[in-house]
Image 1 (cartoon, rainbow, N blue to C red):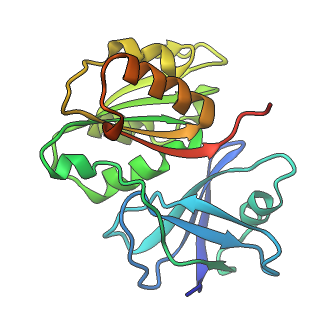
Image 2 (spheres, one colour):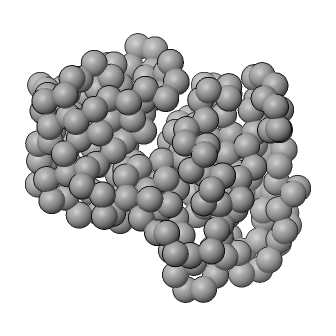
Length: 222
């Protein structure tokens, strides 16, 4: 059943990236869940991964405002007190689920694909820090770097500019730094080309396909 939620804040992290924060209204979810957002007339809709923690009193979505994107432009223009319609949570991507069974994991993301991992970190404060490879175009596109550096072993790749202390290039350049353990699970989220390239690399290094979990956020232009 769909529900309505009042906007608390639209928090801009970069010129094209914002976090939409709305009242929770009792919605239950787990890290990795998505909710579908709608325009007021329900003519446009799109699923977004939740970035908030399971015990927080609000919901948050990490969104890139796309050129010509009707829904992302609509959401970016919301003001505190505005009402937005959302679907019930759904999904199958479960970052960190393997860790609950005592198995280590690595999270690999591009762009707003970091959202499910933020939900995991905001929900779980006790487990040992996991490893995260995070790729962005420009350093300003990297969201909550301080939190990520505090809570996990972060390797940040910036593809379109040089950022002091971080890799200049694609996030897949960093795969060779990963220790490969048969018990490790890998959670991939973001651009389809990154996910395909990373999956191929992991399989070439004898990682079981069942240990590779994938969630595509964006498809590269043909």
